[in-house]
Length: 107
Image (cartoon, rainbow, N blue to C red):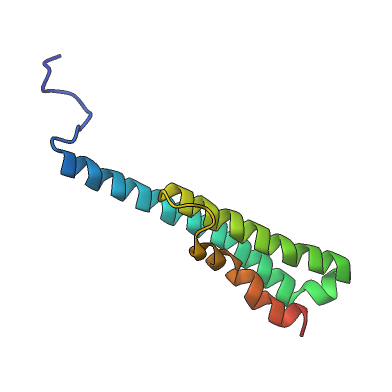
């Protein structure tokens, strides 16, 4: 096979390589944040909506706490993918589903 006829595209310049790296990190960050955020949000929605009738109080509080843990892990994953420290202030965004569900859990 001739050397110019391969399936792989290699960046020709350093700027192009940085741009490709940025796009890859953003794409994976959106996927990780979206999937983990969806799981945390659905769990928070269940705890807030059906938790009182379907679950005993200790199970409801346990699932509510797991909502926060899942959200924090997802936020930390996105931060690490973007080469940030996991204790960056943006990690608080992972607690959003837990904070919103707290209104119904404790209300």
